[in-house]
Amino acid sequence: MLALLAQAADPNSQQSPFGSFGLLIPAALFFVIFYFIVMRPQARTQREHKSFIDKLAKGDEVVTSGGVVGRVDRVAGDLVFVEVASNVKLRVLKAQISGAYKAAEQPAAEEPAKK
Image 1 (cartoon, rainbow, N blue to C red):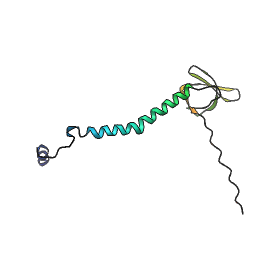
Image 2 (cartoon, rainbow, N blue to C red):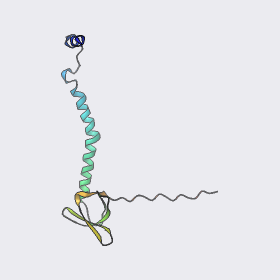
Image 3 (cartoon, one colour):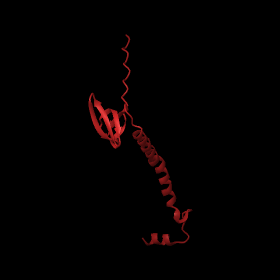
Image 4 (cartoon, helix red, strand yellow):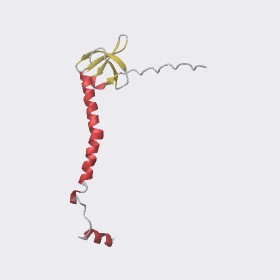
């Protein structure tokens, strides 16, 4: 234990080339990488979603956060009236619209194997 303390107090021991800021550089590098991998793409996604919500119009097919799929009947302030079936309309808050509904593509029917 005393040997470790003696080495730490030794003035001839090697110092970091960056001085006392030696740990600050890796932390800053970590933050920059974190920004470009996580924060920037998330901000872009939020901006796109807000743009979609602001442009909602009659006839758009949407999905709510609860998983209900329907067609926008009308938009009134922060409410969206979504028609989910014939003459069945739901009032949904704009904030609860997850995004546009994209129907899953039908897989191409496989041709029967020729014998």
